[in-house]
Image 1 (cartoon, rainbow over the protein chains, first blue to last red):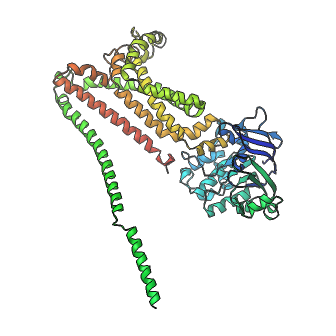
Image 2 (cartoon, rainbow over the protein chains, first blue to last red):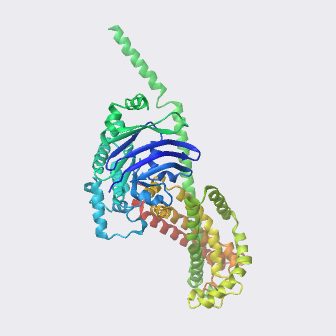
Length: 259
Length: 329
């Protein structure tokens, strides 16, 4: 239920502006990969190209290939809707649908494309997904209450439950803990560790300790200056990046000398 | 010893001067507070003024209507009492407004969605201007257009309806030869209401948080599914408010109906001449009215006032029923 991602010579443009240049990266299945780097270095932009969410912005386009187990996401005739149903995403700010109950939030993706699902199946899926997101015990007695009534950390785990309910191949997380308090952050990090048993997880984070705690491999992105494209500087085992990086810029960044 | 005393004195002195700089009684703070008082007083007065005007209108309507409501049945127009006089035009008003809303609501929401989520940016802003311009056209112009252009153009369609759908009471023949029917009036009203509902809905659709739109898209929603999942639920209270504002205009619209509709007794058929609305009835009869007739017309105005009030309260109740899920919490 999880696939690998291979990116070949990817350039990302907003209109004529080159935002990210020449990324080559191989992301293993059933692993956690962290993207770190200073603000504006293109790591979030690059993450969004992995499920074509960057196309939400007008004028955004890519050159190069993103292969999901060998299938190019940008091949002719590939529908971004299909891509996104296989590669789920969790955002920086928790965004459960405020007009839906907790239960309906979990089922939101499953009910798309007019898929029919029996009540029994739905109940089982809701329980399985919420348990997968370590949220079941906290919400099992109030599944019909609005999702927006939960705390920030619970809302973020609800969003993760919603993402895993559609059984994606890959889960992308764009700074999933930056709006959360330390205890909620810990809960989400524990969850990320469990998720990698089943899913390929890619996480963007500003928090280097977090990258060190949760990821198997780390990619460091950097930018030469404003208006210049972001680039992938170094990609290696997380312990290598933090203890013995090959590139000077990586060492400067992880040791806190800039960024 | 003396040094420490000096120090503590200096310390005291510093505290003292600090106190005066940010003193609670300083003139600047007092001026700021006076500004607050003036502002809160002004807003309170504005709020009270609206209540007073509303109350004054209601009081005027009730006092002036009492003679008609208490007069013997035979003296009221039609000779059968106020209730017999008013209920056909209440029904006529509701029919015309209902036709307008049935046509205007889906068109408006569709156009608003097109502008906010589908059209390329330049087309969207152009279309937005045109819609806003529609709202600026005076109602008498709509009335003239309805009477002089739309009614004759649409009358063949009424003939077709009478021939093919005549078994439905609302399309019973013979159709009006002039086309000046309640259905034509309703269509003209819908054109007048569309800009109101469209521009309000568009504003609300544009306010949908990007966060929720992206949440839907990231689950693999198509654009239409994203609209069903994130935009429409978020906009629901706003859409209802917009429809109610449109309904308010449709209920109260006078000139267009007076010009378009060839009025008469209440009939079920929408394509024959007949029916009347309260607003048009008042406008057409008021200039020559005197005595009890004036009172009767004002009583009709009171009924229209009550209907509008009831509609607004109903809308508020519908919106508040789903407060927990509105996203406001």
